[in-house]
Picture 1 (cartoon, rainbow, N blue to C red):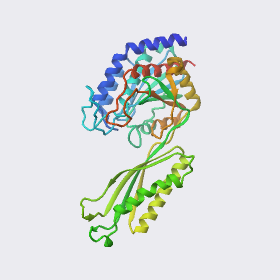
Picture 2: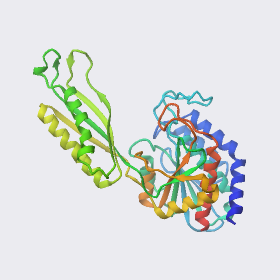
Picture 3: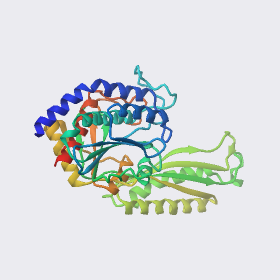
Picture 4: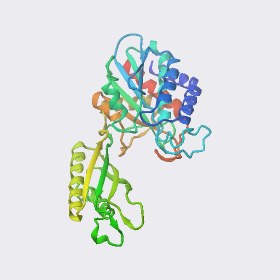
Length: 392
């Protein structure tokens, strides 16, 4: 039965490939930023409605879920895609490049959404071949704190019916198109946004002795903060601590009153996360005090570390080997990226896996693209994972 169903799903994925690709290109050409995905959501809802799911429900202003019921009551499995884009000016030169200036699908969420649509289209055709139900979660704002996943969960996306397991996928550049990789356990980092204001005393640059130079203090802090990673953290723990923006001053001969910094903290363990945050403020307090400056330190706490359930990950990997063969499955990698899919995995068992996008520049770059051969493979595999879970 499994081989028969694989062939059936593959035939359906090929049949629906033009629809999947067309949807991905429409989404790519019309990207929208986090929590502002109004047209994106309307387009996806209208396309999903065409295969007549058993219900479509808005969970947030721009997030919705579609339900596909099988032949009888049973377990419920969820499949998720994110739908938002990034504030990046596209430079791919594609005929379906972004029409929205300064906004681009540079992380593949257009592909994720199109593949989930494809999976739903396939599952709607085989709903008599499984018991239970499938939830298709089209989620906003993966790229912005507090993360659309946390909001969707608060609004009940994992209830009525209760989700028993959840699966999601993310494109990965420089892996062969349509191959997939799995990683049980902690696969991605937690993520916090850091905001620092260093306040000094402004004055003429020719009389630095009567000022407190926040530019100098900021430079000392930026140089020193890496000692938290190299000298205050166990070498066996993973920490990324980066200051990514500096703003201060407006003239060549004026020492400014303040400098603003922002950056990111990524860790793979909650205890390390808490310790590093304390170490940052301790260092900041000491440096500013020694120079006679003051500071304000704010943290926008982001996503927790993403921890794949071992059993569900091995299950999904086994399903992928059924569907793609052993050569279609690569050894998954751990990255210091952050993903709000982590919130779902705090609530229900599941797995988040990589799907190769072919040779392209990295995620979050202005020239990021993907080999569209990935799309029907990703759609079919998601459908097969859902079917196999419900029939196991």
